[in-house]
Image 1 (cartoon, rainbow, N blue to C red):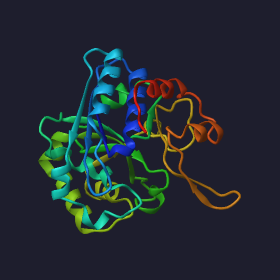
Image 2: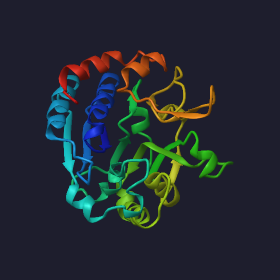
Image 3: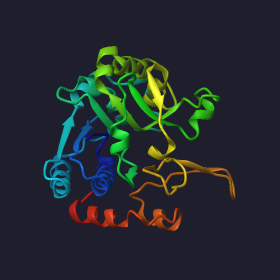
Amino acid sequence: MNILYCGDKNIAYGVLLSALSLCKNNDKKLNIYILTATVGKHKAIDKQLEKTLEKVVKEYHSDSTVTLLDLSDMFNLYLPVSNMSTRFTPLCMLRLFADKVDGLPDKLLYLDADVMCRKDVSHLYETDIEDVEIIGVPDRYGKWFFGNILKHDYLNSGVLLLNMKNIRQSGLFEKCREMCRDKKMFMPDQSALNKLAKKRRLERIYNEQGRMKSDTVLKHFTTFFKFVPYFHAVTIKPWDEDKLHNELRIFEFDDIIITAKGVYDYE
C-alpha cells in the first residue's frame, strides 16, 4: 500500500504515530511518502524521521519503505499567496504538488497526521477508483455549509484515496494550486478539491470525525464543537496524551504512543 503524508516539522510526531498505527493493524508492505518543505516560519521535517520511521516499519514488514521529499524550492515558486495566513498551515497544501513529484505511484492513500488506524485498511485501499480522481468521506460540519446539503458531497480531505494517473491527466492539482493562489478560502485545498475534482463518497468508517464506534477503521482527530457550558471549538490531537485520556477517555493508542516515545525525540 502506498501512503502519503504532508506537512512541516510540527507534524513529524503525528506522522510517526499515524504510521505506527497503520503498521500495527495491517500486514501488507507499506510504501510511505512524506512531502515536506520550509516556507517562512514553517520548517521542513528533517531526515531523522525518515530514518527512524523506516527502521520501525521494517520491523513489521521487512519490505516496507519510507521516503521523505523536501519540496521547498517547488513550493516557494508556487506559493498559495491568497491563503498563506489562514488558520490552517499552508504546508497542508503540499499534497497538491504530488503530481509534480517524479516516482510517486498511480494510487496513493493520503492521510492527515492526526489520523489513527484501528483496523485493516486494505479494503479501502483496494477500492476501484478507475472512474474518479479522489474518494473520501463527507466532512462532519462542512457538508452542511459548503456542499450540497441533500447529497452531502463535500468531502473531508483528511483521508483521500488518490488516483494519481487521472489527476495527472486532468491537471486537477494544477487547477487547485491556481485556485489556492488566486482565491482566499476558509479551507483552501479542501475547498478547491471539492469544487474541481471528479469524486465519490466513502463510508463514514474510513474517516470517523466524531466519536469512535466499533466499526471505525480510521479515526480522524478533527476540531469539534461543544455547547456546554458555552459554545466553543475543541481540538485534541493523538499526541495530546493528557487530553486524549482525561477529556476523550481514549486509551487504545497507548501502546503506539509508548513505542513512538521510545524511538523518536520529537521535541
